[in-house]
Length: 236
Ligand SMILES: NC(=O)c1ccc[n+]([C@@H]2O[C@H](COP(=O)([O-])OP(=O)(O)OC[C@H]3O[C@@H](n4cnc5c(N)ncnc54)[C@H](OP(=O)(O)O)[C@@H]3O)[C@@H](O)[C@H]2O)c1
Image 1 (cartoon, rainbow, N blue to C red):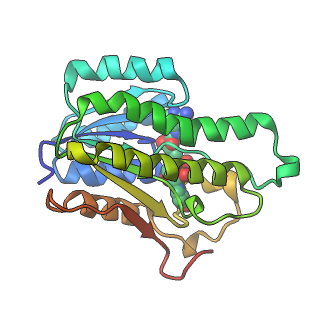
Image 2: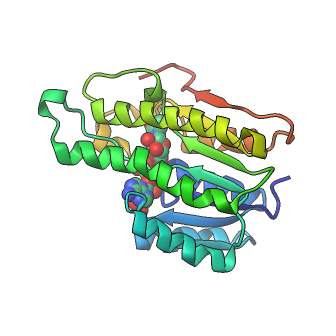
């Protein structure tokens, strides 16, 4: 069902994005991998090409409109259409109260998690058509507020609002929009968020990827609009 489809994945160099890229490659999807770290991009491209699909890694900073435009100019040479967009690029702010949060960190988190999702989605839409799917990797922090996470919470609440609005706009075009709201998942993001967090209580990024693929494999007349995923033991 996903075999031969083309998926663009942001945040594909590690964590949930890379796990999703691997899962989609196993389904036979061709991949465009986006991230900033060129070494990790090259490693992901080499690994995924070995699975017998086409994988192209393109360096792009989702915060930067020019960088996003350059990526789309480049990718259209190899992939004139996109069937699946996975917005997984994201960062967290370090645990800090609003009183302690500096403007640079606030701006960076909002620019990546909220504006980045908007910039990539706006650029991808002209390449998508009926039957396409957009999956935005949000967070349980899109609905629940946590002290010391104001920038992250604001970006994820905003991204859920963006996602819900987008869904209503593209519904009539036959494009599905899925909001994925994971709880704690064992990825490098916790190095910023809470380095001593109990990783054994978290989900694996492969589990989140499996849920995303299951949503994408639903028959075309049906959709998952919101996917809330949680470690079986509950929040940390
Ligand atoms: N892990 C969790 O517990 C958890 C829970 C709920 C939601 N989430 C969400 O899941 C998504 C993925 O997070 P993760 O846990 O997989 O984190 P991660 O392992 O740190 O991966 C983040 C990815 O985002 C990319 N990225 C960051 N800033 C970017 C930018 N400006 N431009 C392009 N790419 C950028 C990184 O690549 P480069 O460094 O190469 O740019 C990396 O591939 C995020 O949106 C996060 O908020 C995570």
